[in-house]
Length: 252
Image (cartoon, rainbow, N blue to C red; front, side, top):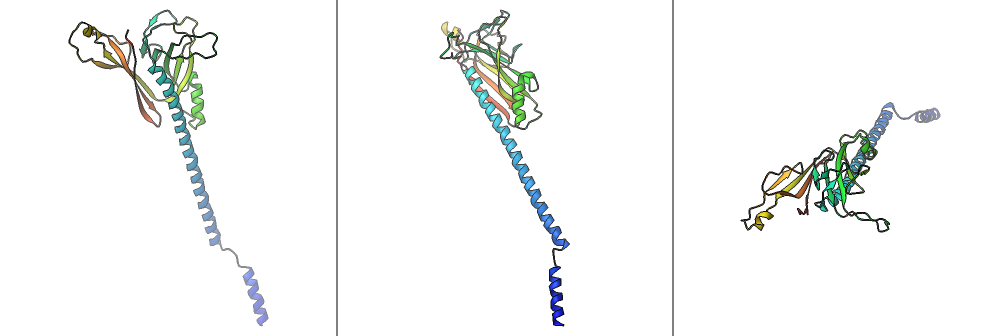
């Protein structure tokens, strides 16, 4: 009798296993771990995407600052003749062809150039829709960092191999800002009181005014000369950025 009971106890122990409740708990825990891992991976990917976008924006801003600062800081009072032979002012803001255009010094020659050119250069800037052909490189860079359907404009810099252009003079272009929502350029002009001082008249404080278009229609007795330039940019996910440059502009 005792032998029979011992054998029966062994058989019952061998048949024991996980209950349905234990299996459901194990599946639930595994599912929770999977969901948490998926959310963590998604957050990491999204953080990397945001970091890449900000890094690309910083790179383009550095490129923009490098080109524009160098161009503005070397502005000189030297007008040109365009491809039609018409005289153009040294500085043009909100003109018919470009958003901004001016003449600058400091265009370095290559040290191994056999035929040195002039160190004076004419540059211009214009906005184009990001989907236009002119912005193709900018659009590709923006899409590579995850912005598959970008909206806005790119900023192009133009420069010419000659100062006074002819009919066959073609400009070269560079994209210096990949994505910009708005751009405003203004000139600060100050009255030139040198004529009053030369006539021994009492010196008056020079009046200054901001202009969104230049050259302006000057009606005062003293001509105004540009003394500063201000750029206001609105960038996606960054907001408004304002840059101000003083101009070493000779009115003579």
